[in-house]
Length: 76
Image 1 (cartoon, rainbow, N blue to C red):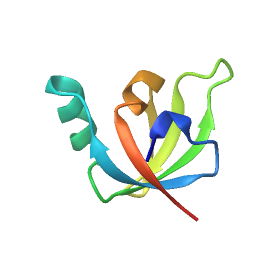
Image 2: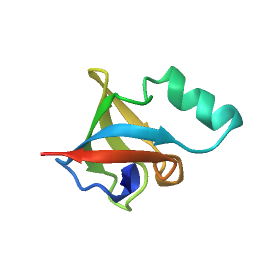
Image 3: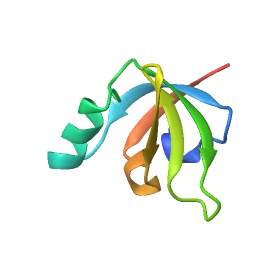
Image 4: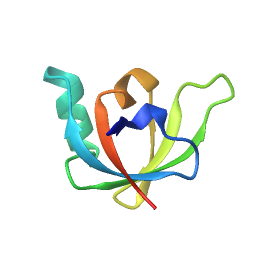
């Protein structure tokens, strides 16, 4: 498995596991990032951080350190 921050724009993945605890973990769950959800990386900001993803039908911006907590299984 790879982490979400390792995917390139246009790549998709299925969330396999969320690392971390406390407020960041809870925040990700509230935004729809949970096991089994499909995520697509849309783009990275010009300096590489944050990144824009599509999850549960809407666009979301995440910092790379937050995205590194999300393990994803790539889908073709």
